[in-house]
Image 1 (tube, rainbow, N blue to C red):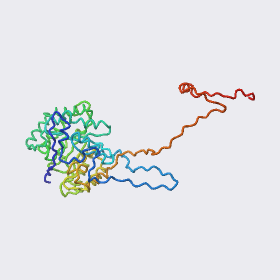
Image 2: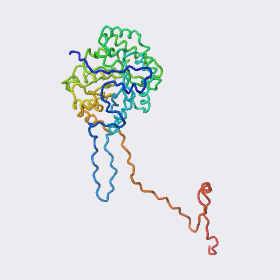
Image 3: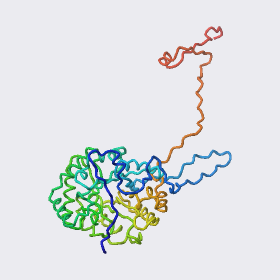
Image 4: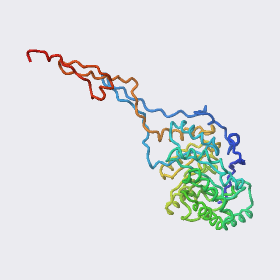
Length: 418
């Protein structure tokens, strides 16, 4: 099969030492319109939210039970999911906005990328990851996923000859210190359990950290990086080996570095190339089924760090089938890429797929609300019962507290007929 070059690019901004909020707000990872800006923003083309069925009317004279909306129970095996929404603080803010659009469904996965333009950014320049770390620490069951380039100048179309040289330098340990620095910063930010998607889509031709020019050097280099990061005290990282779906420039199995340094076997699976059906995406060489089978053979969980629409327009069939595939195969996590042309929330170009996505996930993890009475009936205070022929004496709250009650004075002591 001829190599399939993907023209999709992520124009990661150069991150300066100041890392001001203005820089993050003005620079986008991809040129998608900012429909999500503003709390609770809703697009004009949003599909309607699913409406619960009406509650049957109770017969006359019978008190009807309080009706609760039918919400699917939270399955502990449901995949943790999220979406890539932006690489800086705006991406963190949009997680809550997307959750509201999904009827309160919890997005447990936050996903971003380190810029691959220079080593100082691959090290996680101070300030860049702070907002993501804050989000992760807010809840114990959240998952922070970080794509980490293996080489600088990662999107500059570096020649195969130069890639080969750099991979061999990395395999010899020339770049270990950059990854130790990154590991130390993640531990310092108290996100030591970050999922590291290292050298993603290595079987393609887009990135400088591609495997094709020297697969053996690439694998040795991966192992050095993992060894260097795992040596940092306090770390609990998991390393996700994530190729493109399909063969691409090289079979991704030829790049697999071994079970000792891989914790998760992922796959980036967009709706491409043009005209390909979902069944073909499943059955093609090195496709979705091959991915599941390979991970099972190696005893590893799967993931889908990137998925979404691409070459076949507003493909509702792909959306429905991909969601069903993930429900069936239970990846550790998945994150939809949500900007045009891939997305369904920040991109109005895909209304049919958007409706499928929203309907499938609407309120999925919302806890069942406990009804509150709208007009509670006041409970009357009990009236004290006094002994017969007895009149209480008011001594004040403080005295009565220590006595344990009121004193009672009987008025029949004078009776001569006792």
